[in-house]
Amino acid sequence: MSVWTRDVPVEGTTELPPDPRALDALGRNHSLETALADLVDNSIDADADRIRIRFIRHRTRLVGLYVVDNGTGIRPDTIDAAMTVGGRRNYSGTDLGRFGVGLKAASFSQAASLTVMSRAAGHPPVGRRWLLNGSRRDHRCDIVASDFAAAELDRNWPVPTTPSGTVVRWDDVAGFPSTDDPAQVEEFLTRTISHLQGHLGLTFHRIITRRNIRISIDVEDTGLGAGIASTVNALDPFAYPGTPPGWPKELRADLDGNPVVLRCHIWPGRSSLPQYRLPGGAEQRQGLYVYRHDRLLHAGGWEGVHAADRRLQLARVEIDIDGDIPGLFTMNPEKTRVTAGPRFAGTVARARADDGTDITTYLQAAEAVWTSTNQRTTARRRPVVPPGRGLHPKVTREIRDELPQLSDEPVNILWKALPDSQFIEVDREANTLWLNRNYRAALLGGRRGGLNDLPVLKTLLYLLAENTFQGAHLGPRDKDNIELWQDLLTTAARAERAAYEERR
Image (cartoon, rainbow, N blue to C red):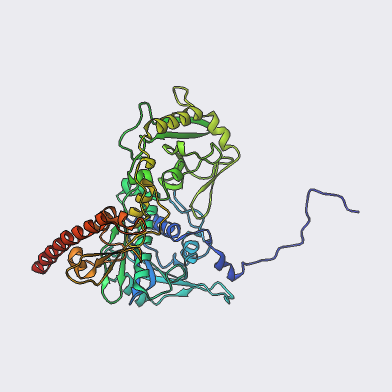
């Protein structure tokens, strides 16, 4: 009978390369937003200050996506290392990358084909392509034809790729709608671009502001060219217009010689600013905001410091870290969040400001501000029929946040052909306020429309006509109002169309 021994004897070594099909499992924790954020990281590490994300639409279907930057590019002698899964380079003290899998994991989480084409100053263009294939038997990477790499880099991008730049191309993107219905594709694009603006604007808000980085998103129709770009604006969760006296405060503690600083902020009461609301809503965004090299890794949640509470939604805490601090934080490879270690809560409990303020005092102060300023409540407002299709997602969220909702079916605001004498039609059976599409081009000024176009006009019409979809039938007053709206709005629409045709 053997007994335990400390040493394990060995007789040699054997090489065990990873199964090539392991590529299929990379990046499974990514969403489209976090995957593209990882690609933006690479562009920023390459000193790019202009980055364009472009969706490609062929006929009506989405077929691909590009990320283009004007960074330093990749030399021919380093392209293979850059495309090696797990390939490590010498990261500088300010680089956002760290694990050597970001580009590949982010891309494989979304697309079956990843192509990278790049040009470094003074070097010829170079390209490589990875294809995900369940029957893959090795780690062979395709070498992209040099003339094709040059042609892709030299396309009419709004981002200069000369003397250097990089083009990342995704094909066979899993999350794109598998439909030729233009309305569904437009709705997907509208929502996705809006979500991307919010996520990237929040994740990179410090970098956008401090380094003057320009990130934009557009859609290229293969037959018509690129449309108008949407800019990613910095969404600073700490950009409040005023704050209670004495705040923010810095609480400091020490963990094995590493200083831990918590900058504790209190928002000034209920706010409608986008930097307060943030993607997901203000209540979900209370808590800790952890940054590494100005890149936001973690946006909200208390990580064991305190339970989430709607009365603490004004409380936000900034923490800057350089990397993993044993027992404090661990960053996941996707850079989508950090996990607090077993020593984090105790370190926070020891933290003090110069005036002796601790974390408990801070949370009590934040709750007191919320209680004293939260006088405006949706309970005092008239309930409304929920907003449906046709309204911009940001408007829909704002309506749901600000107004109590009835249990009725949502009301849609959509376009269809109507007689010229009608600008609107109240269709209670379909729960839809129809707008006459014969006036659409004039109201858009010739721009291309989408499912959620003209958000100001549609919001005003929703506020005006929403109550006509309540109740079992239209009363005399409702019918009179609809007739009045019809006359005035049709006259206004005709005047808009006449002005538009004159400009043309």
